[in-house]
Image 1 (cartoon, helix red, strand yellow):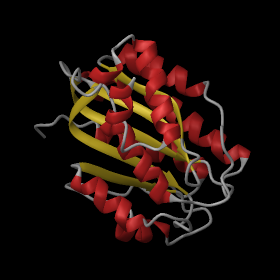
Image 2: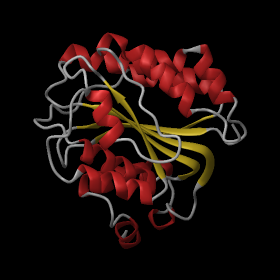
Image 3: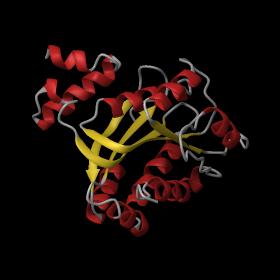
Length: 241
């Protein structure tokens, strides 16, 4: 157990505890999580905004949009094009510091069937937090910690941040962004423009980072399903392209 806590030193207590649960469920020795990694083409964390500005219906549209995207034939073909390594995907809800929840742990997808099954699991998730602040920095920081502690090793590592407002909390967004960049992580953004028409510009200037990083805006929450599908098709491109 001491080996686990040494390996998890960079994670918050809540994130480290969730990691330990994942370790126990897989049956791997806690001290070997970092050593026994599975190579994948892409590690992708989908980070969903669960701050108070996102109401119940709007959050449901995020969940339904993601579930539909993984059932989409084009997304399923994109997953299959990543064979033989495939993609490992996790989903988190973020808001205020200390409140990030891993709602779907890293799961390896290699086929259209895997993608469809992941979409079904996505459709069943619940909202765990109603954060009072929009701390994009926390979403990035905790997603980067999740990548660092995962049982996968992606040739490309990506955090996909979706949100409907500017960062208004702590810690420093720029520090979180640059720390992820230094770790070789690309951050892409899906700003939802319903309350902030200029949010795409903010995401371009203050959120996304890394080679080929991009913003895929959604006009509103009803447009989220289209935007996340388009975004996934860009992020799941083969490494050689």
